Image 1: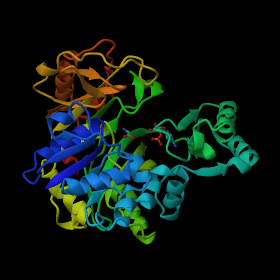
Image 2 (image 1 turned 90 degrees about the horizontal axis):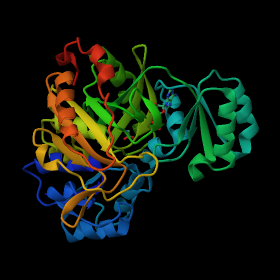
Image 3 (image 1 turned 180 degrees about the horizontal axis):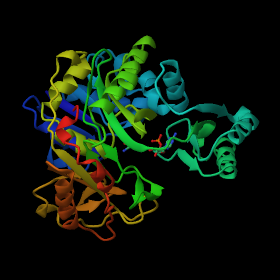
Image 4 (image 1 turned 120 degrees about the vertical axis):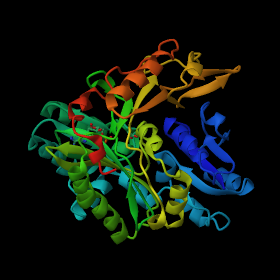
Length: 436
Ligand code: AMP
Ligand code: GLY
């Protein structure tokens, strides 16, 4: 079976790596891919939002399965485009249509959905540009910190946690009246702050059945101890030790099942991944956000733990047969550390030669912002590599991943030193009790 993956990050490299292991995988294409995916398949210089070009390519190369990595093509309606074109409508595509993608592309839609289907989430209200005064009055009634969210997609930057009323009022006005996040902040969600530890739970569904993939914890801030600016994600650990069977049962009963049932009730034919951004508030899972794709860098820790065939699972999802698919999980822990360009998430330089890649043979090195230049692999983005290691214990996996990270470098490279440290206090609980 010829397969096309859309995207160019570490997540897509991890998909390519796992898909390539399947005996069912024929030719593998990644559009546009990166230097790492180029080892596993053929990189194709097509933008994942150029739908007609993708459709023509799929026909030309006899592609039988399309896997969409990032959210933007989903939010722009790549599934709807495929369904509208009679010559490609039959080709299974993993990823929801535009309506399903609203769970990620509109925070207001997601909040209304959660309230309607009784899914636990923070209290909120939404305001548009005609409701600035009402919004400011609402902010005055809120406890601090106050969370402000741009309604639309803002590349992970649209959430501001305000420590006091004055900051919240200023941010609120900038978002709504000065288009701080462009069209994305034409509506703003004002939300109650939830205090707890975050966890990402991944679900694959064909709209009827679902399967819960391994959970993971992401590390979003640039600095050790969760300090500094938000990033796309600086590391991940899977499984999350506090996500014991009792916690995961709550997640399934209160969040996963009502979400799948809610999508059905809304007549949204959802085929793809649902990424539940959760917060554990004193043992109770609450939803912070939905994403309609896998996480990056969580995928780089989650997919290596899937021991069954990923192509079979994706095919079953895309063709509506998930009920019959197999999903088995390796009980070991996977730890991922992201190496970034100096200056990220602010401005940074590209084109630095990466040294030491050949020595990292014990662990998995997924590429994100990399490119080939005159026969060498150079940096080509903010997040450059994601290194993953496995072991029976998180501690040993962390030791191993950091050994590899230290052996790779380029001018200005940076990584967090404390990935996974916060989870060690839970590891006395045996990991085998995890429901995964
Ligand atoms: P999001 O873009 O929705 O993932 O939000 C970015 C980050 O903001 C999340 O990962 C959380 O750390 C934080 N956040 C979002 N909503 C809340 C909330 N209601 N309470 C506390 N933190 C939040
Ligand atoms: N790691 C968070 C995300 O992919 O959105």
